[in-house]
Length: 121
Image (cartoon, rainbow, N blue to C red):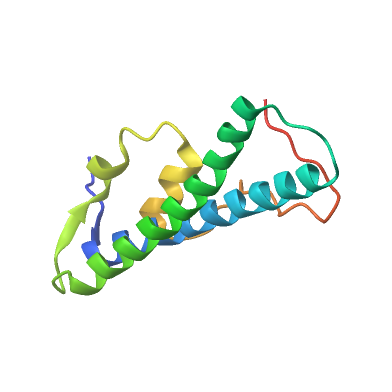
């Protein structure tokens, strides 16, 4: 078996870039929910608290992105990690591939255009 290695700094930046992408998705959800709430649709307090968790998720992802970027900048040049070990427990194959390569994979769906609904089941 051929072990694939990557500089630690690059692996951390790859993870930060993916978390930044996820933060953007959370921002889109947060914006859509804000629009829906301003439209006058009433939301029970219990559900409102759950909806506020989306904003906390987005902010947390942004903070983790910054943290990983800072750790990457401070990591030693030439320090290597074994990618096989790093991604072996990630069940989402496309995500594992992105983290391991730092490249956008063909399986990534294009961003929906305004007004287009996208659902995954």
